[in-house]
Length: 174
Image (cartoon, rainbow, N blue to C red):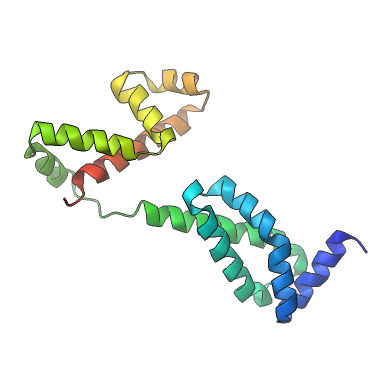
């Protein structure tokens, strides 16, 4: 009997509601879940994504139509959990541009500088890097993309997100 055959049998047994098979299946797939979560989640979210994904798998494996679909379903569950955790981390209520600008204009310059420094310090390294290259070193998107050896679109997206995070930090209630 092959490992794939054993795993398929384990999946089929788990689909019937066999609690031992479900526990064994979670043990068998935990390394794959963790490896996939590391690729798709923020490092601080990996453990939560793994735990939530394994809970979903345990609860919903009975509804899986075919054992051969298990692997793709497993990775879909993990990716969805990573996305959910990421959205929760960056959740905020956006202000209209006019209100945001008005709020920033009425802050003392020294206070704004200190808050900007704190906002930049709070950024993940990959966001901080692009914002420093663009807004402080005044490199073009093309120059940043060349320096980081990344596609232009990825740099533009990362810069946009970095600026949104800084804006969110600066506009957060104090």
